[in-house]
Length: 429
Image (cartoon, rainbow, N blue to C red; front, top):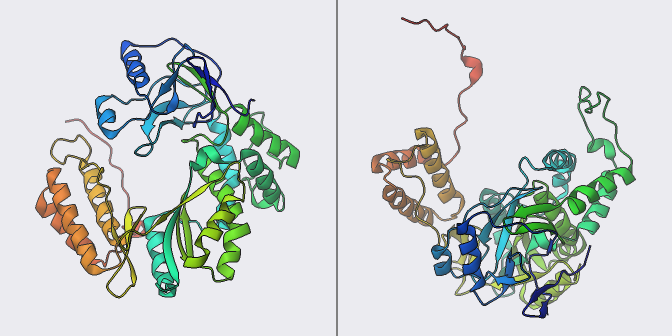
């Protein structure tokens, strides 16, 4: 497999294809609509993207929000392994493919791998998986913040999935698993292979080769303009990519961040996939960032975002310092966020799903705020947002009050032990 795949544009070689994709075949356009889409993309003259014509031409796919609205984005092609769709990742960034491995060639193998790797999540010391967990961590550590010496920053892993050093991850994961293989290959005794034999723990070399085959050899997908293979990193949409990416960054954290926390350089640190919240000494910020970037310099890269006017967005919260320089968080919505949720009157969704969506957002207002007044503002804005989606105002206010009365604790549901199920035969008149 080539380390860099060169695409030719007017006789010039371009080695800056950011998607790390290797072209392995060509297909004919399926519809006039797709042909028009590709020609429109070809007229963009900024950076190369991931979509390629049958002829050796680079199509620049850096699109502005206005340009996005002009084009129709939809799922295209059928897959060898993945199905592929287009998505604008961030403003002023190229388009990237989003791949799904559902019902693909490797979907069964990935489920098998994911089940084996699940126990590794317990070793991820600094990961969080929700805004609720972030709020808990934030409240537990904010008393350590000294504005004269410390600084709140957000660190981003640049293009994490496509930057994962897969060979290193496979090597380290195999070592970790085979320290205590019985903790990972804990199959139910009744489970059998396709040939009816009892499943046994494989040897280390067989398991390592299996991971290499699934992650590096069969990582192919197709589009209307040809077949492609992921050259580097992990495909977005694969069921095993999140845990592998988390494991990779966790290697860095065990080698670097853990020592900085023990030395007192970092007083608060947590990570949601590729977004890191960190409270660090001001005079050590650049040194720590440089050390992180030296961990695996050919793959993993980090950038830093500082507070602006004492405000810093993180996940769906905005971190800020109040008048007493105490860190707080409040709900944050991007300016580009859509106001469309579910239309209560015209949507064909069942009523319970519409109400469930509302309840989820009410809880989110609570978990994204540390001050009561910020939560009240968030709930007021939420009410108006749902009214614009034709939810009855009375329904919204009643649900908010109902959840307030429970102190924003989720309902425990019915105790089924206290109920008797009965089945009645159906009789026609």
